[in-house]
Length: 252
Image 1 (cartoon, rainbow, N blue to C red):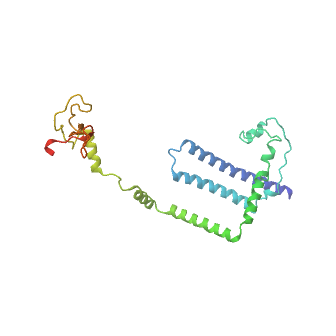
Image 2: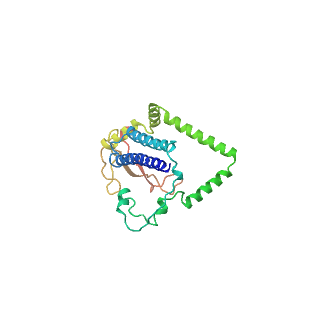
Image 3: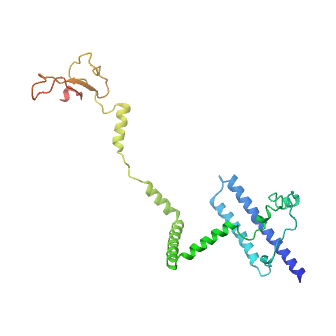
């Protein structure tokens, strides 16, 4: 009877190790594609890789839940030899991941419970969850379900609808007048719409800002407004100067 159980255990371990190896190879292949073939990788191909991994993990779960599979929870692993020296057989068996089986790494690899810090965090979460009343918990559940439903609805919408909505959002009203923009560009670049004008009278030399007029655009002329003594009431002082736009004599 004991030999039969040992054979069943060995067969279950071999089958489990084989299926885990398949999962490992699938992960290696998928990671290689993500790192080296990401430019040619398509979304359907990514979904296929996820589906493959999901199927392999489901097969492992079915194997563990099978009635013929012995319960691994009842099995105890006891390290028979601990050494700080390098073990070539162990390194080859673990693909160079565990070259040494020493007192330092055994608690991590043979641990059957979470780390003390993780256990403490789980206890805190359990206490906080116990403090929430049934009504508050139900409200949070309803809110989460509503958010998930809205997200699923958006994801399940046809792609054409999403594209049309995006196009409608991008079609904003223009904030400028194309005619005014073209007129401004033409005036600055080619002088279109600008009149060639000269001052209405002779310009006295020697005054600043009264040089020869530039053709092709409007100019500013500094003129003196005269007419009587500056101390007479109601009259503009003769010393006041202003810049006015010169106009064509025929346009008056």
